[in-house]
Image 1 (cartoon, rainbow, N blue to C red):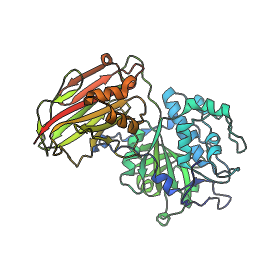
Image 2: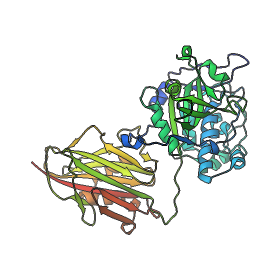
Image 3: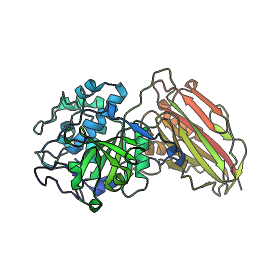
Length: 452
């Protein structure tokens, strides 16, 4: 288990009428957790007025007198929703196959009993790295230990990624969480619980005096939103039984969410496609600051700009994917310099899980500029069905002999999707679609000739 640093947490069980919570608010752990890539502003326009995953959620459970909320929110609620959505289960099937909070919590708790809390990040790491068992396989128990057979059987239920979509320090929390839910991704939230939350009904309405820090960490699932309900609200699934709220759920207005939500994370499962359907596709656009598109042509191996550009040329660079994929991008020049340009930092998750994702490099409000060294500049976008050790691979590109195209081919070798399974075209953008058929990477290379 990760070391817990700078823990700001008070385990709440104030009186017999209140409920146990149990979430550690570890500021360093959250500050270093995976984050989503920033999509272009247009991707958040025209979201549906409402979206709900409630029909795929299990009957709200009860953590009882244990500090196990992280296990309930991540495994029992959100991981079950992912599986139920994928399999289109009915309510009976959902409840019969709900995942075990104890399998997660018992590996990350601070002591051998269940009175202490745990970290939401540690819980999500268990789901990603080890997986989880169902409650039928691993009952809700404080005493049960995890053995090697449990770990082996849990692997098939791993999530492939999780990523932060909202933080109290950032703006537009509501917009990002709505986007996740509209894309059928459940969200788990670390919230600061005010006293009235313990006794809420269908809608939680905190008093104005409760708008302060309570240091009462609680993990809870977000299953839907409705812009027209209570002036705009999220629906939450809790772990305090069906007598709490309305049948174990409550609504939380957007303004209250923005204040009491500390962090929120999207859970991501692997998208499955049939073998005949293209499973990688996208497009890349280069556009000068004048608004003119920088047109390219395909030479049979990679794309070349139709004309040369002078050093100092300012241009915008956009890319998108039309199916979920891991995407990486880097640039190079004739001096053999290699620069990673996406993901933007080490925390950023390369997986883009939505039906369409549009990203600007470096952002929508900035330009790229051709440097003062004339010659060839290369951009390479890697679309992959699996996560890549990109830093090691870029070192391999840098050290490989030959022209840039040859260096990429040698470095990725057997990972590359067969050329006959890729369709390239250019119509105001570099476009492609591919069927991986057992391979995993398609490199899209664009060459720019620039002069003084």
